[in-house]
Image (cartoon, rainbow, N blue to C red; front, side, top):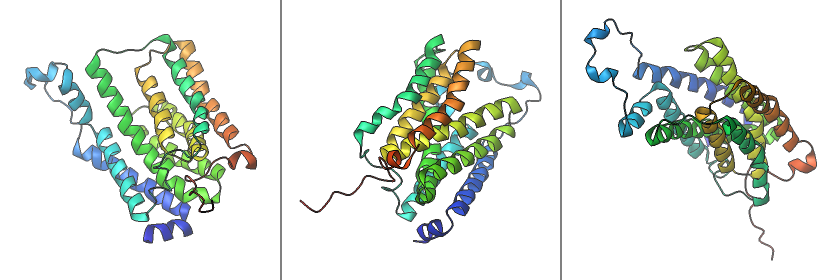
Length: 273
């Protein structure tokens, strides 16, 4: 297959090209849902000043450039995986070592600590909308970076794959956020993406499946999206989700013996009885 052959010969180039394609999808999404300035608010209909509720709120949040980008990201990742024949090798299978699911404790603990100061929930519709938005975003990121690109880069070693996929995901987040928002927010989100990638990549290797990674990433991202962080909680969360995630990811891949307790995919059952 063309994608498989190209990835085996030029895995890093494939990763860069896919990341560049995602930048293109970013601008396509923004062109589809442009943000036009309002010249005269008096001409706006009364409905424009009303806060959507219920299903309208969920639909309103789904109709955004970011959600369209994440949906296109998912479709691109799935299409390339199917084209390359990498569905199983990208981790879309059951974990082969169920005992390694205990390794999810650290990102789940950080998410729980993030919620220790409380959560802002305005209603069931807002909660559902926030969860769906986070789920689509994490699915898109994990399918591309811990699925497709991880499979391309992992034959050179899981540590190298962790570093490269983390940097590429951070580069994408930086490019997307800095063109629409202030620098401090762009830097914060980039740091979370890069550092989180160390833990998610290590979990991807140790569990031999992408599903636990999606679970941990979604739970943590959703906790951040609804948490009401105080000054102390915010500093603790940033420390644990940056330096803590880097340290935990490297700990999970600390030596050859530990790395042997993982792999790209669930091993095939032996034919010898």
